[in-house]
Length: 124
Image 1 (cartoon, rainbow, N blue to C red):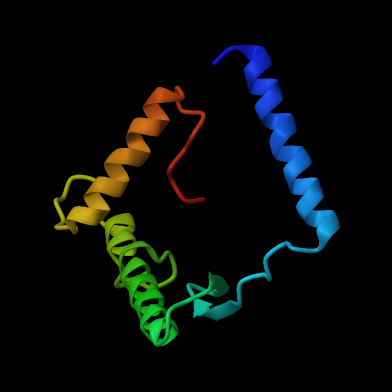
Image 2 (image 1 turned 180 degrees about the horizontal axis):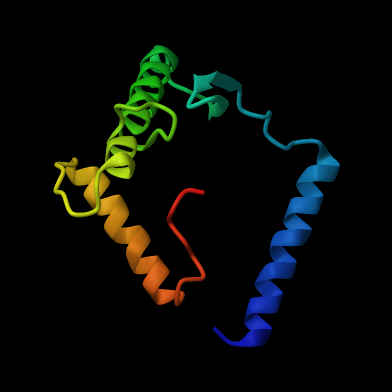
């Protein structure tokens, strides 16, 4: 798209938007609901915009379950998490980890390598 056409389209959108604003016909804001709770020594907050009927309870449960799964794998203060068990293991030993943990660690090591170590995935 050439530059002049792009500028004309942007101006048209701005003019139409300003006209609607001045006419007071902007749509009503959609309802927002907040899901919040505690996890991993901190809190979380999820804003759900215009949920379908019955969706909030299911979504809230799914968020809690997923955060619990993450905590089981990556907690630094729970001695039985995958990360804690790996951190206290002797360097010359093998330990089973979940596929998700392995993928996360592989991704973190790849980013570290791509940044020549500027990104350090180790904790502390």
